Length: 167
Image (tube, rainbow, N blue to C red):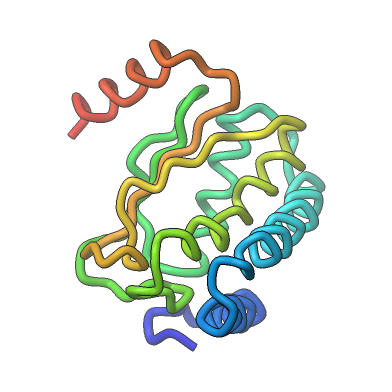
């Protein structure tokens, strides 16, 4: 498991990530749909559990709850949580919390589909995920943005502009 895992991190999550990485290394691109489906289903199931602890089920509330859960697993900085954007990043220099360093963008995207499933369960709609940077793709940090599906390009740009202005 990874060195940066928090004390009470979910080791099942890390074990599944390791299995996903090894499966991808052995079977390549053919493995990605299976890996993505498993993680998405895990997101759907965990999202249903999260919902039981929540009172509001809009995008912003879901992002807030998922954000707190992510921080329990590893090092995470909240960049922005709004009605139309959830933007997170890891501090520079930290290891990938699920051990995907230099494994590739595709496997990172498949594993991170867990959050897409969580949003679907909590909010009842799909989200778009944009992995801006990742340790898996060789960057020094991870940075991911989530938007409700159907958000116009104008609204996405507005959300990203707000994020840049807050820095």
